[in-house]
Length: 130
Image (cartoon, rainbow, N blue to C red; front, top):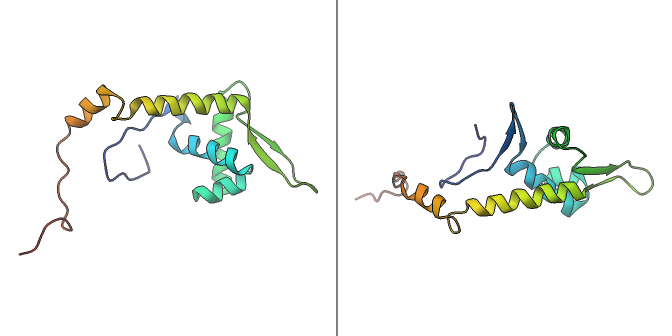
């Protein structure tokens, strides 16, 4: 079950083991933000999630891969930080490549599935009042 709302049909790629989503859109976005920010707290703020939730997502990913996807350093005079490990970068690169493969603009199968959907019903905002 997805917790996000989508106005248009879209594909979402998830790697699931047992009941855990090991990697999905939110976790991939978190990896990218940590890579850009160098900080779990900054990345979680950018994504509008709590620091605790970010750590839960990281912990889930790290449990299933042979080594951590995120390396952290403790605070101190230099401040703490986090960075995506080489394995984390590899995982993220493969995930994004798979996502691109599902894009209707590049996948005939995705186009075909989307074409089978009925047109979205118009909302009351779309209807013109006489």
